[in-house]
Length: 82
Image (cartoon, rainbow, N blue to C red; front, side, top):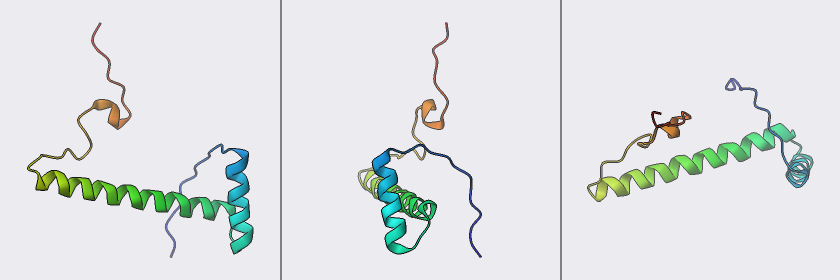
């Protein structure tokens, strides 16, 4: 059983498209599948880096913030009152 997919559209440069196409042809895959693999690997690296940073902060007695302390981290821009 495969995981459900979310629709995501993205413009890419001609060179990125060429590399996705080459990888897809070389390994008998769909370009979208190749792009998903690239993004999955990126997400795994990000998650690993977060865990390493969290352990280092904890080891140094720091209190790590899970999602940061700035409101713009959540996609909300912080505005000063007028």
